[in-house]
Length: 337
Image (cartoon, rainbow, N blue to C red; front, side, top):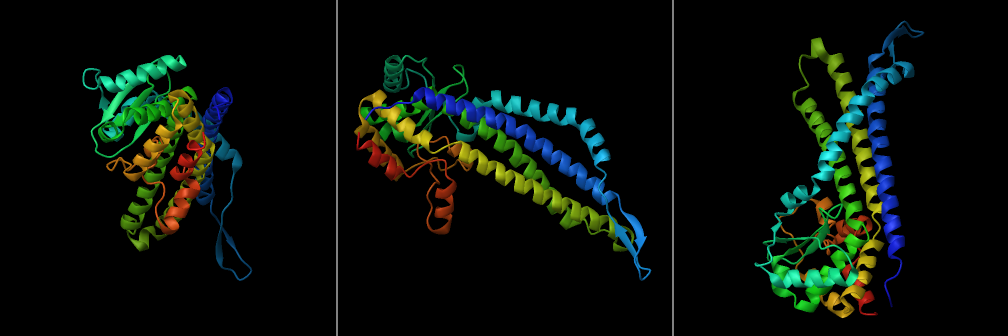
């Protein structure tokens, strides 16, 4: 069984990256328009009398006014989000290192790893990526970066200590295949997007919390204003949370589990020893890390997701939306090569 379809995988990942790039501005702008529409709706109350002479409040939505405000806010929203995205996108290497505690690995510190990476890169005619190491006894590895200047393979000290040369060769070949397939570019793009949406969601949740905790005020003077403010913030919060949740799901579905199978196949072909990669995955799955990394968006970079398959209902939901397939299935496929 040979690894085929690399160009198809690269084209698919590039297409998914562009899809995410197009979707994200539309989602952000849609959130802004909804926010302005809600403000306009709740601020446009007019008093009317029903058939019994009671005063009732009528709310209307003036889309012309909303569109005018939206067009005025458009340059600021696009500029702010664009700057935020560019900083995060091109600062991804520092972001990943900070989140995982990785550091650069010098050749004199571990020539074994450098020799393996160099030989594999020469075998597949690719530029050599940077090599980072994480001082952690648990076992894991991942690839990251968006271009030749930032492509990086990161391993843990636990992985270096436990795996033999053939197993380590298989793991590194797997990660190099991720780089060759442009998987890392797609993953970094999704991490930046989800991070921005999650930050917005956190701000809204904080607003809801503060409103509920401190928004009581004087019921006699501010009951109407606080009530409308509470409703508005809750609606905005619910909409933002729903949009963020849908965006995360769409991102996870865009990052197909097939990329891990493709990287396994490509790594097996590159290292020439599928059973060694299968053995490495079996060892890693017994003690995957990293224990101190609590960001699931970063964890999706790892060769084995450390939180991917919990027990019970949470395990079912995790496996349903996980970006990683079951490690046991990956091992079974590799053993059939």
